[in-house]
Image (cartoon, rainbow, N blue to C red):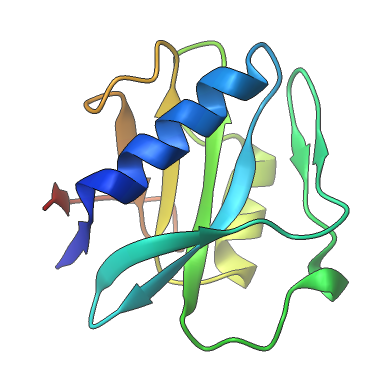
Length: 120
């Protein structure tokens, strides 16, 4: 089971709101299945309907466990591009949706199946 620190989730929601109406995207770091920090990759491009990660800029850091990005539409359902990225970037992924409250997210595994993410 995965957990995320509430302060980390708040930071994600604030960054998503700050990026609105564009998407926000980052990678998440965890220890013992507790997500405690985000890592923003250099060169990440935020668009109206996409976030582009240049994975060659991703550091070799085994604490990086997956991605987080926002959907300004408010619908936190993964697109086909999201699902492809999930398969290549870790076991846990989070999509947050507008209006970016602490309950406006869904976590997914690398196959796009919803998973429980407990806020601690």
